[in-house]
Amino acid sequence: MDKLSSAPMRAAQVFATGLALCAALTCRAQAQDLLRVNGHPITLEQAEAANPLAADQAQVRQQVAEQLAQQQLLADTVKQVPPEVRARIEAGQQNLRRQALAQLAANDFLQAHPISHEAIQQAYDKLIADLPARQHWLRWIVVKTPEQAKSVLDALRSGKQTFTALALTHSIGQNAELGGALGWQSEQAMSAAVLGVVRKLQPGQVAGPIVLGSDYAIVQLLAVRPTEKPSLEQLKPQIEQKLRQAALEAHVQSLAKNAKIDNLMQTTPAAPAPNKEQKHAQ
Image 1 (cartoon, rainbow, N blue to C red):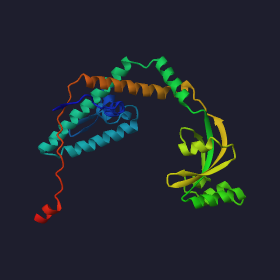
Image 2 (image 1 turned 30 degrees about the vertical axis):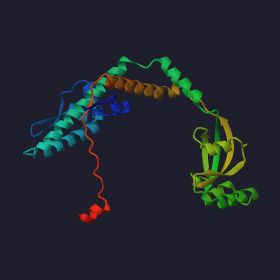
Image 3 (image 1 turned 45 degrees about the horizontal axis):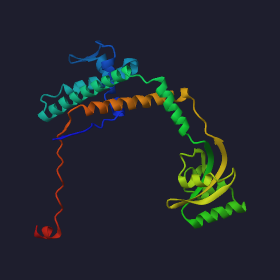
Image 4 (image 1 turned 60 degrees about the horizontal axis):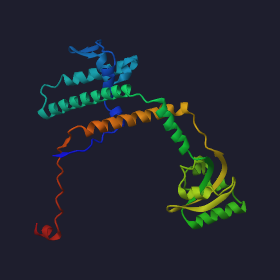
């Protein structure tokens, strides 16, 4: 048995799994029966566990109750449960209980360790500092060969066709149907090859061909503006959620380091393929 040094459980998975059951654990207990099927109660608590929206939305509650009733009708027709099915049912119940308790523990941990305003401000400052200084309004024409790129450039320089018309008829790149318009692009979103060229352009100028893997691009810069910086209030929910997930992930990793986790999974190496002599002998 190999002892694992850590348990790679992602915090986002802890949030996602068992969410419906968490509603039943964290909400006020309900004892109200919604339906009875052959004497079996379908309760509001069961409906909320299946779909938390059933707590407040009557239509959802009705739909969930009817679904549970249909399941009960089918379940009542089973006279004998095979051992393997019984084992799967028990394993599923154990998983659901584990998931719900994990969610409950995650909620308790996050409530006991709120994210401070200082931490949010620090994360916001770093995010703003990492934003590129400028954004560029671009459009492009992407073609397959250097010869096609030269033909497009010649048509642009002669003034015989507009950039939009050439993009509509020749481009295989993004937004060709929009005349190749890419809109405002941050420097982080552009490839290094395109960015290196765009930074040297003045609004209205065209450059190319730029090698993009097996394709070639002609780019036009239309405008430049400073990058808009969102306010702390705009980004606070996303920042706080990200910090909460990071804190929970660190907590789970700490638990894993102090736990005894034995890897009981045995990997069986694949049998080597028979060589030609063995095949012939067979």
